[in-house]
Image (cartoon, rainbow, N blue to C red; front, side, top):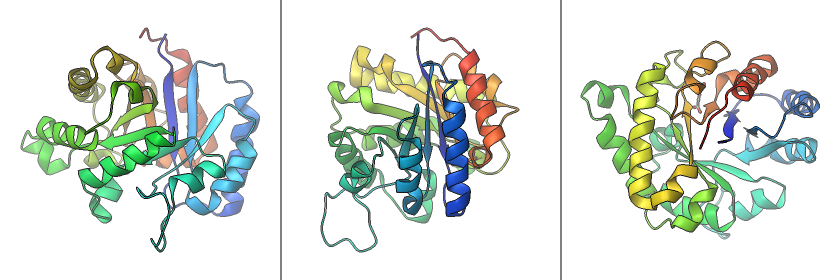
Length: 257
Ligand code: PGA
């Protein structure tokens, strides 16, 4: 069976107290998680250590929302993979569309970060997705194809076991507009084919999450699609009930690999 993966991206939200309380509630509930779904949360950097400590012995893993491609050095304001590893993170999100658009991250920078993340053995979520204009001009496959080929340059078959792709159409992030399950599934199939071309059989084990306004109402239908292997959840992951409801939906879905 394929294990679904549900990850919360807290972005630049919550106070330390709220983050700790949310982590404590997740830790208490996680005891009931069977080993059927991989669950993770990605708090802001300054809350990572607290959240890692709270979730240390739970089934929930903790990740960073970004990291620098370099191992150390004169990079004021930046955080390295070694630092987030040392405090207990096992996961990192790279190439999120907010990083690409607001912070001008290119595919080649994302590629450099990805190589560093994989050498640290992080479960690495690579985000891809088209803008509204790109979808409306029927360039979704072109854009997502380029993001994948450039961001995954040089990644080997042996490394893909640590890779997760998140398809996040930019027009669906934080807007309340979700891609329809069929629309999402169609892009996921396209992504799967690209992965197969690069990695052969090993591509089958790569989980492809959907992200973009996933919530407790639409998660079940999205996650039931054959090519959707999980969710990257922003806004709805800030609320314990809604995030746990998405996890519970994922637990009910059986998917053969
Ligand atoms: P959203 O964000 O669920 O708030 O749309 C998803 C994401 O950006 O990962």
